[in-house]
Image (cartoon, rainbow, N blue to C red):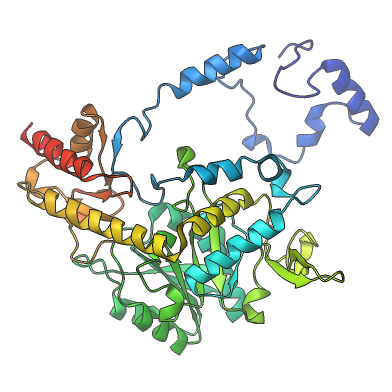
Length: 463
């Protein structure tokens, strides 16, 4: 880089300003700041990046050109799911979360509170009603972090260092859990029945021990099935002094019993289905919920908002047990908590207030009906088995193509030529299911959309 180069996107890149900054702190050059990094870890070449564009208009034109190469789920008919869903987003959700007092402040922390604390308190209250729990946190980065943090909480509560995790867990989430819990917490998988997708209780019971902090499973599972063994798993975990942690889809809780109803001590999940766009995978937020017991509350690393009367006879909204968090005193925090997804919590709160209990029931019922109808249509195709598991699907389910002689990769390529995103390929992550793909239905899918998939898939199978 030339000594006279001033980068248009990087503040203080002017060489003269940099020299004055270095002089003021007594450093010879910028390299002194990186002296602690081993040479083997340093990159000494030049990154293969395009030259910077000096004007805002030129930069915008370049970025839009890159984005235009994408084919979004609004432009193609999509049956992808696996944790990020093309949900219906009411206009009021976008109207509220784009308000400047919610949108722009760093970490969602305003210099002047225009109702954010109350909005998050209302979100937590609505989630608690949906989950039938008493405490819900301000959202974490995403559902995967919520799952990992809930398991960390379980380890601190029990003083143990092993968690048992269902092998039917979302593979991406499992990687986050493993990464977040290492090196001091052991993650052991317990199996599931390939025919049903249900937990293998015999395998679980073999692996339970006095070291088990928590048993973890997802309901519905990553493979889409609704689990029916939650109470048995709760009883087994509690029998050895452990906890039960369940990852739940909030969109299902208008029709399914919440995890607290079958023995879960900690419930976690992802709020993206609650009025939040996919945003290329970025519209995410995670929740953790529990009973209002000190042993649980004191182990939450994230913020909790409560309500209390003020001296003036009004109601005030603010942090509960602030000293728990790394915001109060970082070295004493339960875990480090940085920028959270408070904006998406407010959005989910707006969505839940708009939907109400009846709306959430209709949402869950509609998703189950669409899944059953699509499975029926696909199962009529020669060589196709849908669903590939006998468990009851909620919104998505695996479809097996072994009988067609085609791979999922080839089928998805042919569907994309017809402007359809097929199901997520499961053949590598779940080889026991053969050439199977995870197909997802959405509240946006019409009967005509589902019939079109069946018709186009039939044409793809013919060649």
